[in-house]
Image 1 (spheres, rainbow, N blue to C red):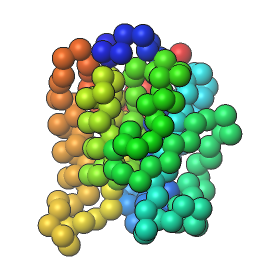
Image 2: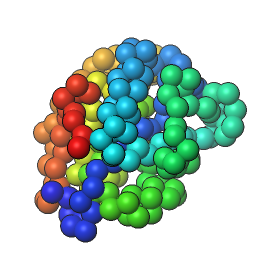
Image 3: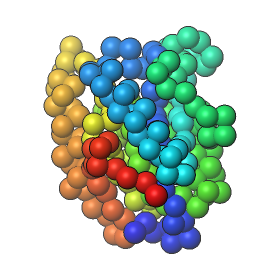
Image 4: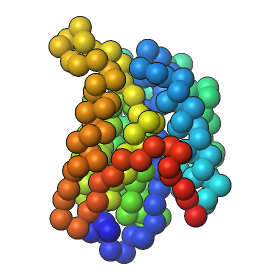
Length: 183
């Protein structure tokens, strides 16, 4: 149970599944397909989907690289949050969007595992949210050239530590796309 006692609802958060972010991502097609399935399940179950799009000097807003991948489409009624920091809450209206909808539990998917996903799940937890990471619906690019582990290990490690993460009055969990049900 989240520490946000007046927020009994759940939302799916889709972070940075943009052409220029996931173009070279590990198992891109499988992860995007899982996110598409997750979004479809949420919509069918009446669970809000919140989309997050990052922009920076390397990912210019409204450019081709900034757009959501063509396999995914945001329904016009679904919230879109624009961000410029790794944590989707920093300097955005995400908290306001979630508060208005009474959201206290986030189901998180997207990219990149080792930056925006990790920052956002931790940011959500410290703000009082319960957070479920969809273990087969997040990805990252290969950063081994700069000393990082291979993407499969980055993803596996993130799933491992989030599955075992704890905080007073909040829960952290990892579930696969096919394990999630809504409604």
